[in-house]
Each structure stands twice: as structure tokens, then as C-alpha cells.
Length: 88
Image 1 (spheres, helix red, strand yellow):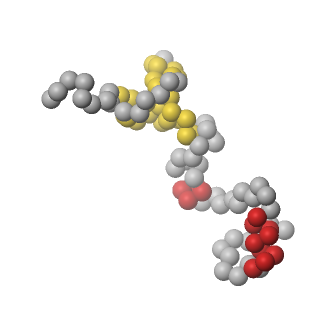
Image 2: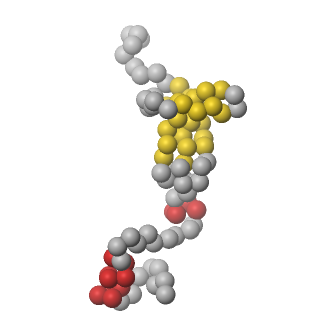
Image 3: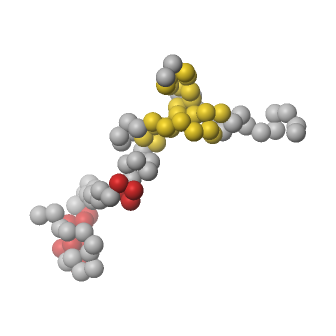
């Protein structure tokens, strides 16, 4: 196989920023940050959502409403066909 044709495949730490969970897997992703885990230094990739924090996998469903959009929708259309309860 030709040298230098493929990116380096190495162990990388992926960190879920919402619950601070870390896991180590092998990847070719390029990062500038590093982290020390168990005395060994790894490249670090920060993630917003992983399986440990995603509502589908955790079973915890919450509605994030920053501009009142959910309430406006409910006023306009009511709760017809809604799978979630109105927070009241």
C-alpha cells in the first residue's frame, strides 16, 4: 500500500458536552485539542449530543422553546395530533 495516501487512524476521545461523558474510539478525524485520560494523551472531539444524552435513547423528551413558537402553534392549532402534553 502506498505510504501517505491515507489519514492516520488512531484512538480519539469523544466528549458529550451536555453530560460530560467521554468515550474512546478509533477515528481519522483531525483535532487541535487534546485530553489526558488514564495518564495517556488523546485527541479530543467535543460533541453536543450523543446516544447518552439524546432523547430518543434516554427516553427523556423535552421541548426547547426559545421564542414562544410552541405556544403560538398550540394557540393556532390547539393540541390536535400532539404527542406531548402542553406545559401549563
